[in-house]
Length: 198
Ligand SMILES: CC(C)(COP(=O)(O)OP(=O)(O)OC[C@H]1O[C@@H](n2cnc3c(N)ncnc32)[C@H](O)[C@@H]1OP(=O)(O)O)[C@@H](O)C(=O)NCCC(=O)NCCS
Image (cartoon, rainbow, N blue to C red; front, side, top):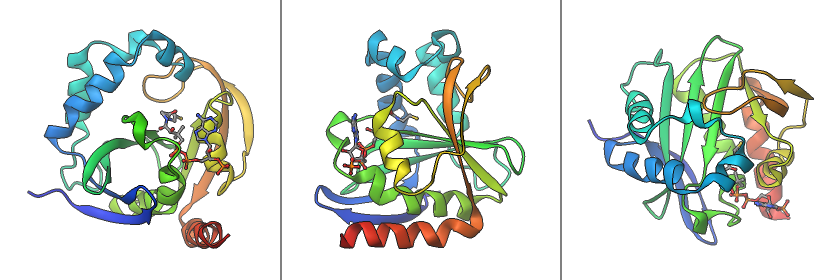
């Protein structure tokens, strides 16, 4: 089955878009997590026990390769720039109101190009296109200025709280929470359009 393609946006760096993650992308994701170094993992607040081995990471992403089942618990998507893999996003689903997404520009050259801002509404629309959810919370560390600045453009912080058991491979700590509902998706595109025009 060829990977499904989703929305995208042309930015100065090229055409940014989404497609389903494929087996051939996984090694770049494994290298990102296991070659970026301890300082980088500490900045992101990763719990190295939860991260596990390279084989664990490989298995985690293989489980998230899209099967076409709308009830798949974990779904991974590639982010491409002019059709070249530059990063991934992972959607983990638990209950209609509890779903967590993760966003990592694995290729440092793609960072600060405006790609995360330009793709944000397309990202949220894509999640809702592949599965049914009531609400998508965002959980980000306050010290991660880049991701918070990007989200500030679209969704306000609802609360900053201590989380004992954050999603995926993160360790406990303080997090900003924001929430998006399906009905708000069209407003995200309006915001992006205003940002692009300004
Ligand atoms: C953090 C991250 C998501 C930001 O995405 P990005 O595509 O680089 O962000 P954008 O280019 O759309 O920039 C959005 C804004 O954040 C600013 N910004 C981006 N990275 C920044 C950084 N490291 N420090 C300070 N500001 C930063 C940009 O200058 C821009 O500012 P503006 O408000 O003046 O326009 C991305 O760099 C990334 O994936 N990093 C590695 C993994 C990570 O931290 N993931 C998030 C985990 S929750």
